[in-house]
Each structure stands twice: as C-alpha cells, then as structure tokens.
Amino acid sequence: MRQERAEQTRRALIAAAGAEFDLRGYAGTSLARISAAAGVTMGALTFHFPSKDNLADAVQSAGAATTRAALHRLDAQPVTALQSVIDLTHALAQLLAETVSVRAASRLSRERPGTSVPWRSAWLPALQDALARADAEHGPHAGLKDLETLVVYLVSGAEEVVRTGGHSAGVRDQLTRIWAVALSGTAAPAAPGTLVPAGSDAQPAGAPGPQVLQTGRAGTGGGA
Image (cartoon, rainbow, N blue to C red; front, side):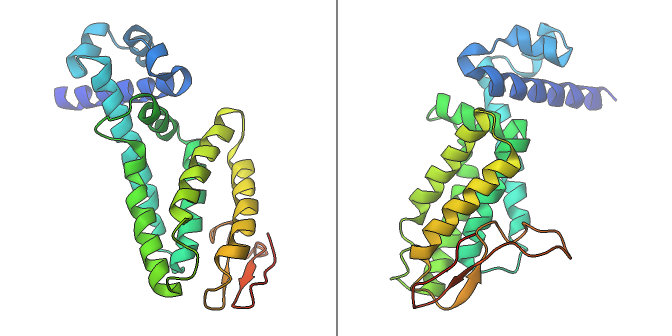
C-alpha cells in the first residue's frame, strides 16, 4: 500500500511538473509551484525528486515514452515507407497539440540542451528507419535524402503553431498542404502509387477518403 501511494505521488508530481514546464519553461517553473499543483508537500516532492533537474528529466522521459508508444502503434499500419514518414509527422503534430507531457518534453529539450533524454531521440530513429526503407523501395534518385531535414523543420513548426494557439486539426491540415507540395517533387521519380498527405488514418472507416496525391514517373500529381 505504501509503495502504491508513493507511485501515485510520483505520477502526480510528474504530471504537475509537465504542465508547469509546458506553460512556463524550465527557468520560469519553481518546485513550490509544482508541489502546490500536485497537492503534495515540498518534503514529499524533494523525497522523490531532490532537484528541479531530476524532475525535468522525469518529465522528458515520460514525454519520450508516450511518443515512442504512439509511433510503435504506427508500425502496424500496412503502408509504404514514404507514407509512414508522412504519418509520423501527423502523429507527432497530434501529440504536440493534445499531450502536455510531450509538449513539455519538447520544450525542455530545447531549453536544456545536452540532457539525457532529448525528445527528438524518441522519434528520430523511427524516421531514419522509414527513410532507409523508402530509399530501398524507391531507389537513390527519389529525392528522399533531404526529407529528414524537412521533417525536423515540420515538427518544430508544428510545435510553434500549437504554442501560438493552433489546434490538432488545424496543424494537421497545414501538414497536409505542405506534404502535397513536397510530394509533387519528392515522389515523382518513385514507382507509381498513391500517397495520402493527410496521413493514412485521416478518415474513419466508412467515411469518404481524403484527397490523395497520385505519383508516377511522369512527375504530375494532384494536391490535397
């Protein structure tokens, strides 16, 4: 029973800290404010987390774990490698818009460079794996080598949009439009196929499908 209460206190502190770090950043967050938000004493807080650095590390680890779990679920989708890259950006944008711990982890990673659990480490390996598979599927002339940089910029931009009031649907709509433009050049040399800039999970079962981008060697395509 005591161990269960201790774990509940720890989870409450991480959740409260995540909300504070997300809103105020590392420098603007105090342990006193976190303890008050969690409804625990300062003594209980420092028992679990002796310093603000320890607590920030725990928040970053929680955000990274949530991110990895979300991307792991994408692995089960029967889509091409390039489609999985598109889906990854939509998943990350949705996490940033809807999950406090993920936003906090991203912000803390920027404000505390060199920390042990940078948020990018939770999703960059999955992106690199998908791009390696895309190279194998489409060949070395498919224009895919710069997509890693593009995705990094897209994810950073998605966070900025969220922090300035953007919501999940709005951010994903912007990503759809950007991907439609990018794919008209990126996917043109690839084998003929259909990619969905909105992400392959954009519509529930039975609903009209999202607009798609037809790709082929002719280099023409329709945008979403």
